[in-house]
Image (cartoon, rainbow, N blue to C red; front, top):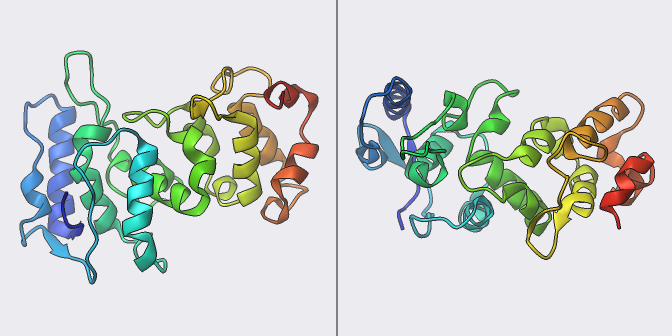
Length: 234
């Protein structure tokens, strides 16, 4: 357990340099010293804690952060890159994909460094998890079934910020795809076939031209879906 801090500009630059070295194949240890060094990090205006270092799921991460940061968040925390970069580094070992030989595969910076681009912000491994769990709770458990990967459903449903800001959309997706027995997603949800999450995203993107999805309930959205989605309602 650690007290949450924020990476300053020097700490964020050092984290980015390390990620670049990792992608270049250099063998290097995670620079955990950046988390506490006053030259690279600073305290928050309140005390909040990470919980244990290890995670069982990304959903658990979202629950922890919603409990510790949520009560203090009036938008400033959600939009503070230093906090999310600090948390991404703290949980890096648990969240970063690895090859079969144990080598980390971080991908692009946006996965761990909060991007200034709103199109790439949903890719951040920690912030997106926090925001969705804070806003929707158990409804989004199915999006976070994989610890080290974003997963196909999260990639499709949360890739468009407009869609994941619509409560009716998220609740409808939960009805369609969440498997209440396994607490993951239903078989076929992550495919490219009829009724899949990919087609759900594409269909709803078309509906934004004629419908105000922000003003629709899950029931209203489910009622206007084509018949191909019926197999996920049985």
